[in-house]
Image (tube, rainbow, N blue to C red):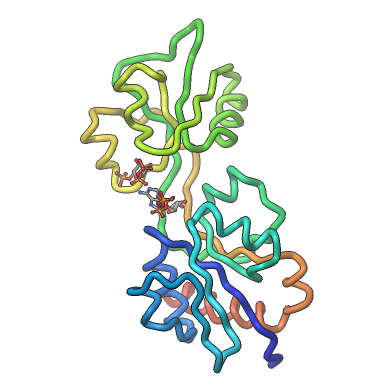
Length: 211
Ligand SMILES: Nc1ncnc2c1ncn2[C@@H]1O[C@H](COP(=O)(O)OP(=O)(O)OP(=O)(O)O)[C@@H](O)[C@H]1O
Ligand SMILES: O=P(O)(O)OC[C@H]1O[C@H](OP(=O)(O)OP(=O)(O)O)[C@H](O)[C@@H]1O
């Protein structure tokens, strides 16, 4: 197989552990330093492989610009950003879903309905498809605060265990879509480094299918 160099963008944060585990099971020698150090670029010279560690929402940027050949990103980020990258494999890790939630027993304000979210594009297309005209308010975190404090009637946010909704006394109204992490590839790398990327996909696929 060709020994072209390969750069893979890895998400920091909650996806990291499952993604690293999957790559290690697929035989990629992620240095142990990865789990402990603050270093952001780690080389595996014997495999001509380099990993970069990025914020989950920035992985798509590195891959779209071609400074990383491949990366791991949540489907939520892919749907929100519509980047020019190929989504080549469902890694079936970091499962969660996007939902509409709000205060139980409340409807939307009939005159000026407001929806708070970290995902303005996903939220506006969802409500457009439902035939509802809403004002979208972009937040960057603690989305569940919005209905509690009177900023919005509804939120669109990630639900995983449901604990955050429960502890804040919110109800889930609609399930929008299921989310898992995906392997994404830069379109030029896909052509130029096809053997190495096929190998990556095949090795990861056999682990995912065996899980
Ligand atoms: N409970 C959850 N909350 C948020 N994201 C989740 C959850 N469970 C799985 N995910 C997936 O993990 C991805 C990364 O999560 P998140 O954006 O919270 O990253 P982080 O690095 O942990 O936090 P931050 O981006 O604030 O640094 C999401 O895009 C989503 O696909
Ligand atoms: O269903 P659960 O298991 O409770 O998980 C869902 C929560 O986790 C995420 O928030 P995160 O922890 O990323 O914090 P944030 O508010 O800063 O986005 C998400 O935005 C929800 O608030």
